[in-house]
Image (cartoon, rainbow, N blue to C red; front, side, top):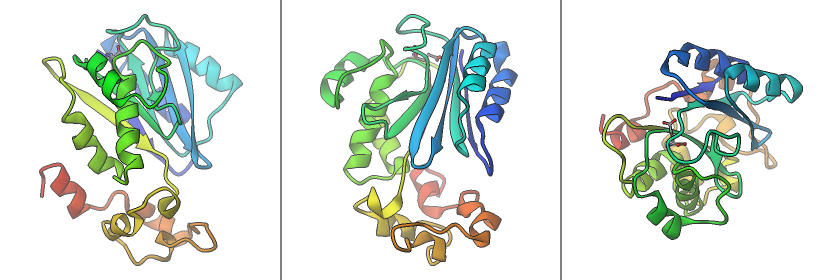
Length: 225
Ligand code: GLU
C-alpha cells in the first residue's frame, strides 16, 4: 500500500513532502517521488527504492515550489523503476497525479483519452491525460476529478488520487470568471490580474489565498453541501 501526501505551504515544500512520506513508510513501497509547482510549471523528482534515494536526488537538484504532492509506490502495473514512479503527468506537463490503487480499465481509457505518448507502464498515467483533457475543456480540477473518475473502474478496496493543476487563472481557463466567483473572497484584489500578474499582497498571505476556507461550491461537488 502506497503513501500519498500533499502540501500547500508558504515556503519550499519538497523536504516536508519527503518527511511526510517517511511517516507512511510502515506501509511498504518500492519507489517514491514528489512534484512541486514553481513559477507556473511543475517539476518532479523520482527515485527507485528507499526515500533516501529520493532525498539524494533532491539534494543534487532541489525543488523550490510552495505547493506539491508526493507518493511512495507499491507497484501493481509496471516494474518498480524511476519511469514508473509517481507523480505522473500528462504529456504537456499541465497536470500531475499521484494515485493509490488500481485502474482496472486503464487500457481502454488509454485508447480513449491519450493526449500523446505514454511514458510509463502504469495504470495511473492515463488519469493525468484524462484530467488534462477536462481542464483544457474549461473545468477546474475539482469539477474535472469526479467527471474523470466516473469513467474509471477501480479495483475493490480503498482508492485515492491527488492531482494538482497548473494555473495562471484567466490565462488558462475560459471560465475563469465563474471559477473566481466560487472563491471565498471573490472581490479581493489578488484575484484580479494587474498587467497580467496576480499581485499577492499581505492580505493574500494572511488568508492563505482562501484555500482553507470552506467553499460551498466545492463542498457541494464532494456531496457535503
Ligand atoms: N497502480 C499504481 C501503480 O502501479 C499505483 C500503485 C500504488 O498503490 O502504489 O503505479
